[in-house]
Length: 152
Image 1 (tube, rainbow, N blue to C red):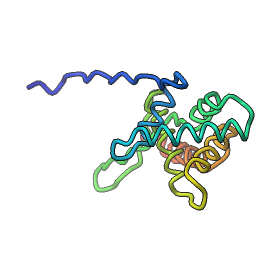
Image 2: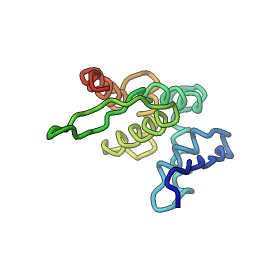
Image 3: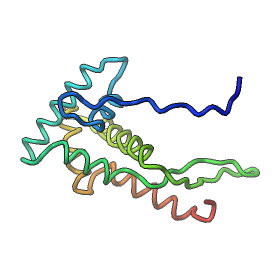
Image 4: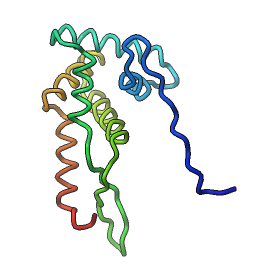
């Protein structure tokens, strides 16, 4: 069997309520143990919370947050000789979006005290304003990539 076959991208059906592929991607990343309805409930409550706090279109705020957090470069560890180097690799837009979603959800998981919906809405609002821990993670990654640009 040949190993050089190109794998077809799986088509993601947009979220039926908001008609957004991005919301569906967030639901897929948020889902644990196949409980997609629970993931959608969390997202719907998050969207209501965003709308209540900002009085703006929540889907637009989520898109802005993902665009602000999405990195252009990713760091991969490569072993060259006996040393391990952090090599920067350019990302395409789809990979950048999935990394941004993961960073936002991880930053929500690291915080505690409030319900998850409120933590997620706060993180998305902060990311749309270019502040917050997900933006800090992006800045750190770009800084490491700049320092190792000679290895590119």
